[in-house]
Length: 194
Image (cartoon, rainbow, N blue to C red; front, side, top):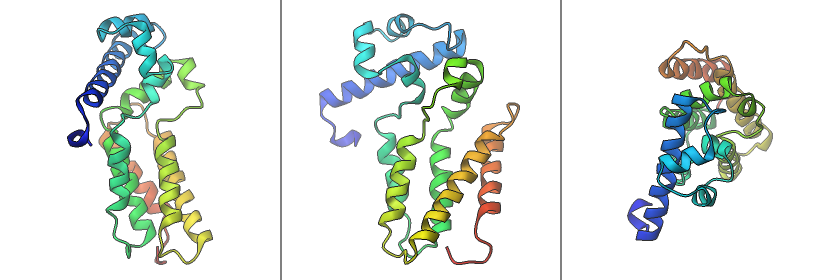
């Protein structure tokens, strides 16, 4: 995508990333609640109005996906072999998606733990991903049983959410990935074709 973007699109993406980077740094240093939109705008050398051109709210800075991330996870999906068992594909896709969040997920988790506003938010940084994943599963033409495919998808998503929800605060991101692998392994079909 970066190679096909024109100069205006590249500048917009650079501004989006500068705002996000400044915001996450301020949230880490000052705390989410104590950081204002004005501080984020000043730290990223944009006006308050420009901030709102890129993010609907301060909360959106924490949860909105980088504009190029969607392309990356769609590539994870499209690269899976058509004859691969569905569970194996889901495991690879979900692990790859979580791995792509290595830099952001730990800070997002800390911010949610520290901020009542974020903790009560219904927004998730994976909403668009999970929608795309459901569409990908529905579009696989080697699925003869929609019920089984939907069940596998829901079990894989539940395993991923369980790994995240049970991830202790004192464990590293690599520990989270091992927890995710365990949850996916335990939730997966035992000896049944994917």
